[in-house]
Length: 98
Image (tube, rainbow, N blue to C red):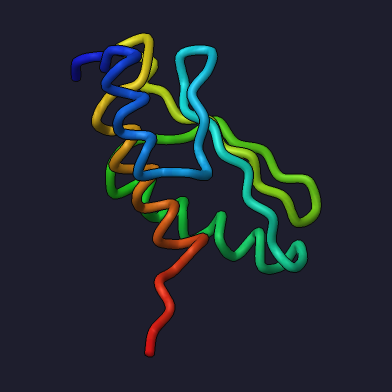
């Protein structure tokens, strides 16, 4: 897995307004209504992580989930991090169904 350049990362982040790039990782923080909703999202994200065999650095305090994604074997951000970020986005901010 090849490490993306800073320019590639910044271009891809245009599709992910909740995410920032620093310290060789992409980072996001999501706030939920309560702890139960936050933990539920974390459980759903865990299944996506297992499916991709890629695991975030994350922490949770009450209703806030903080996530950092990087590919340790590439020592930076790769396509895999953006695949996981996209899966996370679909879980924490699902499209409105009408």
